[in-house]
Amino acid sequence: MFTPHTDAERKEMLKAIGVEKIEDLFSAVPASYRFPTLNLPPAMTEMEITAQMQEIAAANASTRDMVSFLGAGAYQHFIPAAVDALLQRGEFFTAYTPYQPEIAQGTLQAIFEYQSLIASLTGMDVSNASHYDGATATAEAVIMAHHHFRGKRNKILVSPSVHPHYRETIRSYMVGYENLTISGDEITGDPFINPQEFSKTIDSEAALVIVQYPDFFGRIFDYSDLVKIAHEHDALVCVVVNPTALGLLKPPGEFDADIVVGEGQPLGIPLSFGGPYLGLFTAKEKYLRKMAGRIVGETEDIDGKRGYVLTLTAREQHIRREKATSNICTNQGLIALASTIYMSLLGKQGFKKVAELCYQKAHYAAEEINATKGYKLCSDAPFFHEFVICCDKPVSDINDHLLDHGIIGGYDLGQDYPSLKNHMLIAVTEVNARQEIDMLRDVLQEIAND
Image (tube, one colour):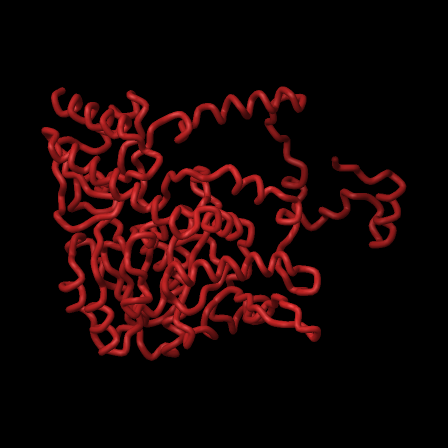
């Protein structure tokens, strides 16, 4: 409840700053702009406002109301009730940046456990806990690589099969860097280029090579040879991951990736119409001091008791911004905690089971749709839980028809890749029942017959 200042308090404050009345505080603003007439509706009670907001919110179709096969970087997974039950404890709501370890042991331990789980999942040496989402984490990898080479290498190679939004974010982040070239994903190129062909573009000018695993089209490739070729040219390699897929796939650390980033939303974080999400960022230990964000470590106090401390955070990120390699300062701790609780509840076997269900259901869906007139799989490459379907009709028309049946269809790849007109990216997770997949198939058949 907001309690306004009394007249006496306002008078005292104005006197302290040498002003007679509140209006005098705005004297620097031209008179014609100071107090404009606002065309506002009549005031409403809290009850009326609540009813109106609920009515507006009801216009949004969510995955609670519809069957969804839309992925493209954000996925519908089942989230155990215990995640929210634990996350909503007041202690976690009030904690922010743990500058004072003696009063922030719980927050520090939560971050430490998160880092440990993400490092284990990716097969990397170290993880931080301070990025907003997968796109910004990928952009931070570019910044880290650029500063690692002290600007002496000015080429960033990005595979066209990296998420389009991630590629846009990289370009936005790097717009102020002089003589930096970002290439590899030109609009005239082949979006389905394989790692062998993409590897041929790596040369001694490259600072960083970025690939996705599974890629934006859902395909799975072993990047061992690509990483080897990049390292022969002394370039770093960043792998963008889907963390759920790592329940089944070889972790990037095993094929010698230098940096691994990704979107943590699949790890117990709801879709929430686009956020807040969580950026995963891990690297080899030798790049530890060039990582942005925060790293929490475990130690012992003077009595030999276990304790947690903020091991590494670059002060330039806070107070010397012009000298900082990154200005990531947020803790993102609450969202990281949600993913920590989720992974802890599932455990190794549960996490693997979720990945297996995603894989099996997606392959069943792909087989059913591929056997349906008017649709076919566009690639024979192995895939995890997303796949591309070539359609005989525009994807936008198909999705409009699907919505009429309570189905959120796949992603229209023609939005980002002009050469992929009438290509639909379909995602299937463990929450999609067989009956829902069959319904998708039947409606697609109906559309093809129209």
